Image (cartoon, rainbow, N blue to C red; front, top):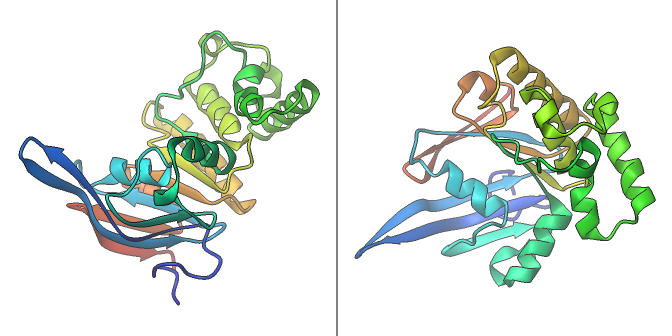
Length: 236
């Protein structure tokens, strides 16, 4: 079975004939219409498409923030459609990492405390959490900023903190929603290089972007149009 078919052997995540339907008054709108795609461990995907093509809906489904209306989404061998809200939250906490355009750091917390936040919910003890946060701060080259708060950081530094926080639980998939959207081009390039470094270390990354230059660094590019897969381009 090839990599883009449903349920290939070894896939970290796959969607099989997924539809997402929203009710708009008396009308139904298909935000996603028959999506079948598989994400193998260590792959780097960019999801592109015009506004309204289904990018955000796809990311929400992949992030277990929503469920398909029809079809199946399986993450780490668990069928998302069968899970209740508590089970979905647990799946997100243990297997997914999120990077957002607006960083979503907690302003009252230090860099170290922001990075440690997922570990608190996972029940790690204080010493383990502190050690893990220091390791991740070093990975994103912010070990000298551990006790600063977000208002004291540049945009690029804030996004690197967000990446470190997203890696705290050693996720199966790292989901990035326009991670360079609020950054200048130089800083954005640094963030992209960091994502490439993480991918070289074996991290599975799915990046949503409108920037085709950024999409070009991904090994696989999924282009959406009107809720359907228009094409999948692969690095030769």
